[in-house]
Image (cartoon, rainbow, N blue to C red; front, side, top):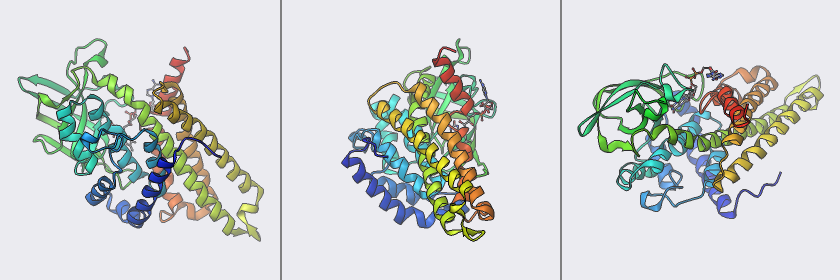
Length: 382
Ligand SMILES: Cc1cc2nc3c(=O)[nH]c(=O)nc-3n(C[C@H](O)[C@H](O)[C@H](O)COP(=O)(O)OP(=O)(O)OC[C@H]3O[C@@H](n4cnc5c(N)ncnc54)[C@H](O)[C@@H]3O)c2cc1C
């Protein structure tokens, strides 16, 4: 289907990203997945190509690109046929550095946003804790103001880029007695090499190339100048950025599902069973049609959300619908694809098999499907 979302500049950018990913990423995916690590060179190359922080002001290394360029990058990331690289890049680009851009002072942006745009620094957003994820206001990591520094104690978990990353945009309670509780949440940039921080890389069922960490803060001293915005502004910023975070997850879901479908059609047309390609069996044919239909439906809603988001329209309700729908759709497509691949669908050396566990995270991270429906229900007045 034709959409008028992308201009010729967007398409030009797409060609650059596609070429870079084909040459510099695709040949290394298996190795990075096996090593459970994306090399630093990748980040620096991405920065040098202008693929990080391009939406930010030129003063911080960006070009002030519109948000549709984020959609393009995300679609092309899906071509790497791994959820890990996509999540690591999106975590940095659209989920973590965005807070420095949203709340940071000029000095803070010069100090942190610039190296994130060049790829010298990798950034993480640390909100989730062992005791709470969906309920952000219930975090307990504590930042106590002591003169010119905050003393930070607490723990975070499931943090993308949290082990190898350099900057942690961390949600803390600066006022644990605030009523309502969310008014006590603040965001502080913590440099990963600060004394008192330890981390452990978590072993996941998929998305292996991205690092996902558990992080411990024990009497960590951070200058008061590392606070983003004012005390108590953290929760509002997190809720505000969720629209972008969910938009890029929707784009990833649709694009990865489409990449899976393309591979599956190719496979079904070449695999012969009972004297003909399995794609000629009606049950398989219909399954492929259902997959294609679901992808198109989700793409239409996602693109409409992208268009409205770029125009500054509040898309909280529609993007929550889209996130719930696209994440569940991507899981279904991956499940059906592995079924069509038969035994090969269970073998990790096949892209489709690898993407099946990778996609399991999309209905959990960035807000679960249940939480998306809670948001939509509230906005429907239910
Ligand atoms: C691969 C991956 C990467 C991640 N990256 C990051 C990151 O970079 N930074 C970060 O801060 N976090 C990250 N997360 C954490 C993620 O955001 C949380 O896992 C998610 O928000 C859910 O929180 P939880 O795991 O604590 O589950 P819980 O909040 O404990 O929920 C458990 C279950 O209960 C359901 N539930 C909870 N409340 C309700 C309700 N009101 N109504 C109905 N059902 C409900 C949930 O839907 C879920 O099914 C990541 C997670 C994954 C898997």
